[in-house]
Length: 162
Length: 177
Image (cartoon, rainbow over all chains, first blue to last red; front, side, top):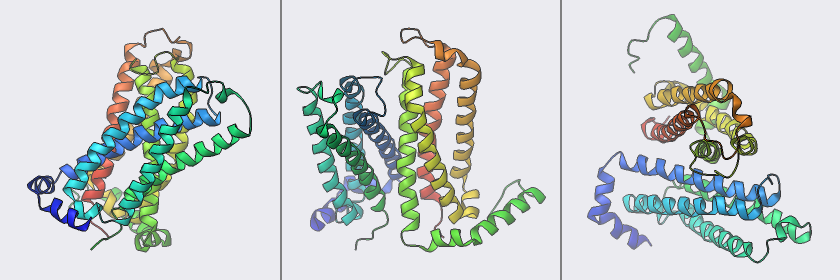
């Protein structure tokens, strides 16, 4: 990882990103807008799962916000990759970055499992049972996981790696 | 540090207040602590993401670009309470960041423009709430949103997106304490 970061930092593309002073803050700002899309979409879906908000069905809510979740994640990946290319040694060997990627993999798995669970169980979301309560707890945990990913991202700036 | 055309007793007393604020124990703690500023900043990022994202949900409905099967009134009733709750967290965490270096933030152009745009976003919201969008509770899902509503939504999106950019810019232009 160190060697890869070293090599990436030496490429001319990386130099270009580093030299363009306004590019890093602009990419970070777009990254934050991506976080806004993802966190808000996740929040709306989780609020529906928990049942705080229920004027729409689970399926309607998922159809409204899942495409935005994926689009937001693509925007985050694109800006995130450019930020890594610009400052590879700041992120790749950084424990905060590595933890962030680990949590991201877990959050993505949860999101995909949620999407897979939507189709066969349309009545599940209107029933009340222990399984529902477990789902509610999972929904809250999933939201906190996405928040933790954002926090780990901010922490990359504060953990010095030499 | 140059304050341009601003001078006189008003600015003097503001500076006295900011210097006092900077000398408080709270300010010192946030400045000196290893974790306090990043922790407050993390809360700020999550809160502002929810503010901007949930406002965008409502704005996109007004523009007819998303949630078009739902009435504006029902959607905003469901979404906006979360916007306000998130805004409270963003305002508190933002104030704590400001307190850590009040003189520095006050002199930062990106900070000043950001506060100005926040005020404009607030005025835009009030104008829509109490003047141009007063009849919104009666709009049915299939009704077209009047032009004034679309203008308010466009302005809102523009203000908030710019606020995000300016906020990040502050981090790059502030000189560390």
